Image (tube, rainbow, N blue to C red; front, top):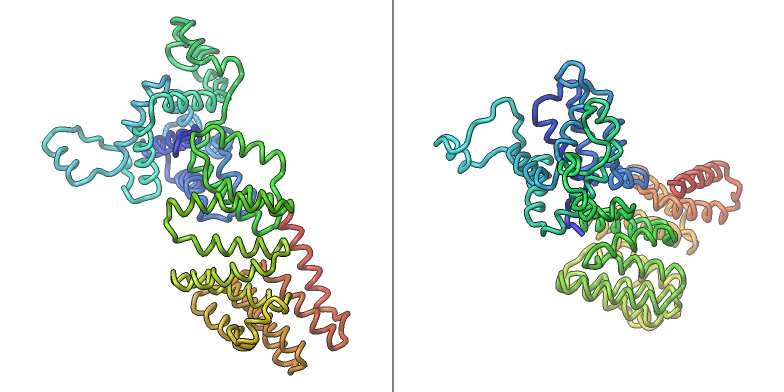
Length: 467
């Protein structure tokens, strides 16, 4: 498995070389650059399921749909035609190596390189666009060139074969412009009609129809991270088809990503398999702490406490959470500390008997003191979701303890304002729950605004599930 380069990234690199050649007019520049940035910087865009899948399943049809309608600087040719020309100019693994040497020259040179050019050691190339070394395109070109240099020979051949298969759907479009191109063969040697035995041995797996999707470890880590986020947010398991796809991608590399153990932990947890989830959780954090020392130790304890509580081991969960708080305070991890304290507060509300000793000794303080502390720390750390949860918990305590309804509605209003201004979709359900319980307490269970809000919330949830 390559660390970074894939056939799709090679196609993006070909499009970059087309852009820097100066043949893309000003009217088409915005479309081309937007297309490149959308696939090189997916984190800057909306990370819903469709957008993220699009960023990692880039096909030749995506290039054609975007570039075919853009006129180039050459009369009678579209940007797609020029891109197709450069795509098929890479005729063999040797020309692929030469392509990387050429595209590296599109990046702005350093002072030392400019000094050598003034001395006459390298010719000047007027008319070409120079990419800044710190721009997104410049960073992409430089990293691609470095990663290709680091590839071993067999990995480089695997990259070339994947590229040949990737561009194969465009052969018919290329032959319409160049009828002399052969119908078969994957490189210039086989197209010229040389030794067919060498061709059959070199491309045996492609000819036999056994093609493997070349995935990079960089893309695999991003996919695993996205899937973990979806599983944690939506509390859903992995479909069987996705498990098979992940297994194929992982088996194609020599090393197993650490996040794969975390996905197995989440999937086993949602399936109710305590032993498997516990084992994979230990595996994940064993590997993680080997590479990142003890920085993530408090998160291992946090996950362990949540796992123990979900399977009914409340005593072990409280012990692990106390250790989490101590470790987070020692490492000055404010986010983990605030979340742990909030979890412990809500756990005490759900299971008051498990925290009798802490309440008797006064370690946790009163509910008002705990909520005041959480609100202050959440506001200082900018943890708006935790702040809204604390405000709702304060409102719930106010009306359950028989205090003024004005205080309860004040907390709900503040939380509602925070949810709207900070776009906290995950907190809408908790807000509706607290608001409906307050109206039910005062005998207004059929309050119309609350019913409308609940209907809107159900519609929002259904849309999120469909995505």
